[in-house]
Length: 316
Image (tube, rainbow, N blue to C red; front, side, top):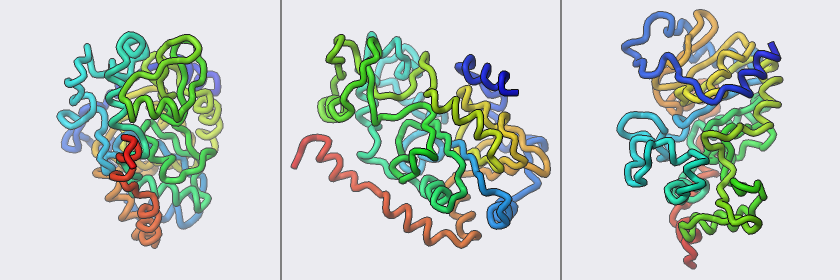
């Protein structure tokens, strides 16, 4: 099995989910769940779930005011016309960034973590799982940094598509000063240049055409065997190899928190909780007796965006 997994991890660049576009009304019985949230409560309270693996996508950050990528009309890809791109995905294409970096720089200035968007209740719930010793690993597909801002420890967090906290030249690979790159993009709105070769520098988020971090591959190989529960939260499962994780795990139970069914729900094993992640997280925490702690945890990590905007713009 290990060899097959390695092949998937190393060779797959993208995957179109065969369930894309399926609505709740379209879903037939193979996507219906005979389990409900009280079963999840029981798994946690009984100790059956003590090595919980989590896979998150853009849906967990929508409540923070960050659009997801693919929702028609409101998703990020549907609202990039102002950048005059040949196609929406070009903003995250390393070849396009080499020849025309300004669209990404403009977008990055708007999305830079820690300035305007705060962790959601879902992020704080995942922090609580870590604090209680129940989180095996969180695999986030997001580049918004909200898991990091929520305080999830580095050893429990795998940012599959990278982050903004470090930066590298796309030509010579020289590591750039992260603070300088942030100031160049956020304060000046200009393209950071490599001091070694003069090439374009970008934050270390994974563009199309780039490999996922080595740490993702290394940890996934063991985590899919150790996990006793998988939570899949707010993702369309559109981009491989991350989209393959629900089929790779060996645990008996998987729980999908999502607006639409994007994976098969196995009768008697899996659970589908349709709707917004934060709503189900609040319900789950209420039953577990964790809701007060959830709200306190989330309140601690809320950002005063007015002060941060002033600092970013160089105001006193």
